[in-house]
View 1 (cartoon, helix red, strand yellow):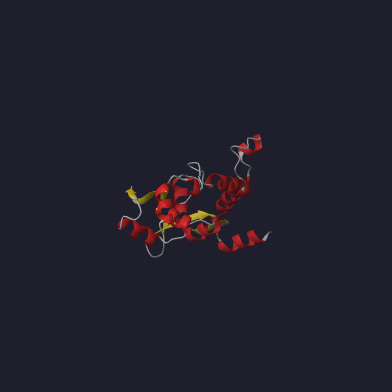
View 2 (cartoon, rainbow, N blue to C red):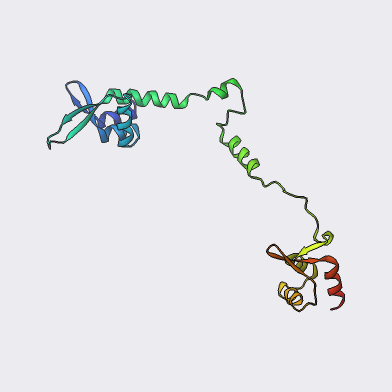
Length: 173
């Protein structure tokens, strides 16, 4: 008798040579919640007997042998290989965790939406790009635009500066 069988027998009560369990014990033996056990009983996958308890409330009684058989059958079904894996179809057989993680890594890598161009080659610059190219701060460039020393225009939500105008401003510094 294995340790699982001994533990299972410890959970059961023997009554008229039929081992019975209450719903909490049966749920614990299966490793599921009481509500899940009730759903299994509603679907007729596990039989249940209802009777009045000592307090007058309705109690659920489960056959311990049936619970054990259901648990063993469920464990065997969960170990069966995927049908797609046995046919050799690798597109459908994603059971291996490493394959799945590799798939996620490749799927989550951002794809470039446009061609990247060096800042020095752009004819039109954002304020951050102009600051990075000249070494001046954004505040200095913004003040220069406000005082009309540097030509710039707000397009969308950001300032845009022509590269030619930026070169002229730097020469006049």
